[in-house]
Amino acid sequence: MNFDDQPEEINLLTQCPTCQSTYHQQDARLIQKQGSTSIFHLSCWSCQSALLISIKRRPSGIVCSVVITDCNYEDAVKFKQSPKISVDDVIEAHNALELDNLIEIR
Image (cartoon, rainbow, N blue to C red):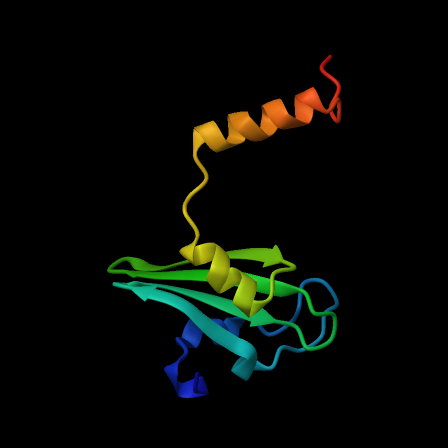
């Protein structure tokens, strides 16, 4: 992705929240653009932590959400394309953990 293709809001993220290194803005990569919402992955060249950034443009302004992650760009794209986790999936995982005595019920 060219720097010119990135929304100007990405420029507000100048330092890694984990190690305070200065971001290289060219490392911001688009994961998805749908309507007025764009999702980017931005990785830190120094500590390898990353941000998932959701930017939504609205008539009243811009809404931006940022999550720190250890996912690389390829993982983020893969997870974005995966089916959503259902309530049944959570119950199944809970039951599997409970059967293996990996968690203790209090």
